[in-house]
Length: 192
Image (cartoon, helix red, strand yellow):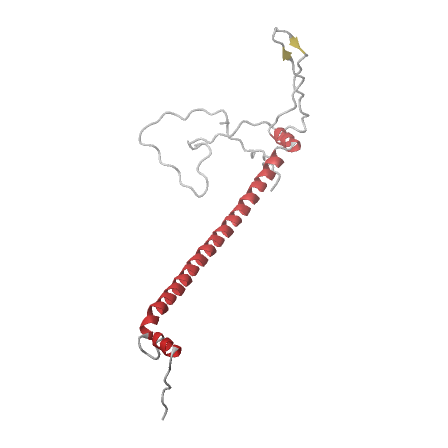
């Protein structure tokens, strides 16, 4: 059948150096294949770790940018409120609501003790602009026995130990049949 041709000379020497067939070739390739598989696996795992770290950083950056935008919006809203409250017309309106009036001419005192200028009193508001000045209402911790219990409540029990009479408050006035005068609602603040 078929015979292998015999090699002579230089070809025979080369044939002896290069192993032919399955004589030990598989054993030499196994470490190389394992090295390639380990390098590829390590590279893939390193790439996945790097990719997840970059995506985590991107999410954190997005959250920080959103937080910065919200804080910037809040700062601008607060600055608008400060500007609205410190505007001259708003200050004048709030001072007027508090019952303040423009001051008169000032006088200045020099270091040597002489007075420069003629001081004048503040101008009075017209009667139509002034609200009825009332002292602040003081809520007494003691019930008013003349008024009687309010509807839907029970009368308080008398204390077992006699106590001192409640202190007289300046706003305690005798009960009258006329209802109290309505008060003006607080002024609304500008800007919102």
